[in-house]
Image (cartoon, rainbow, N blue to C red; front, side, top):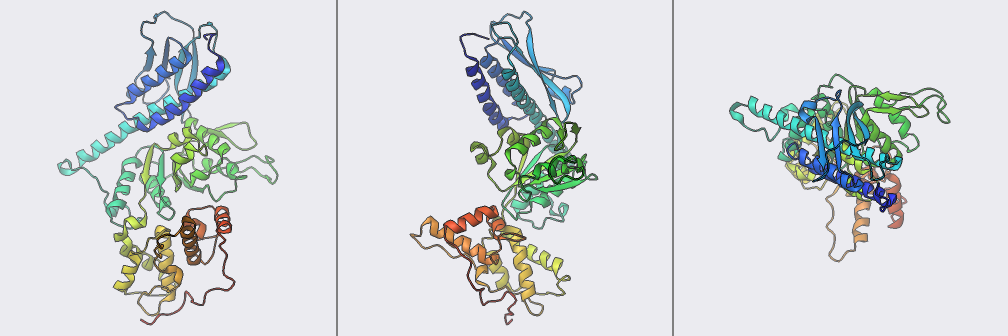
Length: 485
């Protein structure tokens, strides 16, 4: 290493490259992979002030023919004489993937461990870039095969709704999301579902699983927001007997249960930082340790994650690991909110009626046009889940075979804010409306925090700050009041 340049400066430059490489992953395609990886190797070489850097694949790694044997960068004019190197090996999905090799510094001695550790992080990012390019290539090949099999070579831009019997609706926005599922399901690529609460993220995750080669294997769902932070690591990875107070027996974690299948990590944005690091290792190397154990365990799991948070903002604010975000976000799918597909409301209403009327011992034959119109004019902050609750409440409330809406004030269309209202007034009004609609429930099914997309403790804090208090007596209008038809 050049003695005139402090080690700390080199380490800072390598740390900065982690963010640069992670950002570059968002633009990787099969066509740009070679130039992008060449740029990465050049940046590593320049940061270390060496004459060359290379990434070579392991002989045992899969699909090497598609990746190529080696990627290399050499400084222009540098001598081609053999020199001693530092080698950093990386594994992906539990399999040896490749080795990042760089020349020695000017001192002729091996790089210190601090540099080697940072090179390992950069090597993982380079490997991920190559893997993402391969996945892009597989998706292109799948699309070409679909086009070849389709008569006349017509491109399938929108999905056939009959292929998704559990996802109700035929709006273009919904069918486009379904088409994305069809594109990615046959691969093993990680998927992130972005959407507001109540948009059906679990249904789409199941759709990815049932259309994949893992369909006969387990589908394991984990709500990361519902697990206490003190127990989430044990839930995901299991624990050994005696690992902590209360661990009276060995427990198998959700990842082991999902072996050879799919694990759905709902609300992944709520994972604590230490669990994010362990999850990253599972994604990169396919292995983990149970809590209280030093024995590494192998696992083969496809990950489908979901969140209503803006993960890019969370990454920028340091609340979510950048390397985990780019490792997960191979194939993002945006789920449309109900307000962007209001034409699906009638089909959803009749689906919920048919689904629940037997359990409620009711039989409905009519939904007045005025009722359907009122439902299509609402903003639906809680999306399909909110609509389902409103329809079921109306079924309980209605007399005869005609569906009538509950006339509770909280179910009316949102009031327009008056000009000149402050942000605090508008926020207070909206939170109060949602609380009334949810009957002031902050925990449990259909609670206000879930509709607002907040943690219950965050909602309590906002209520205290905005001086929102539950009324001392409940309202006089009953949700079971019968309205003359």
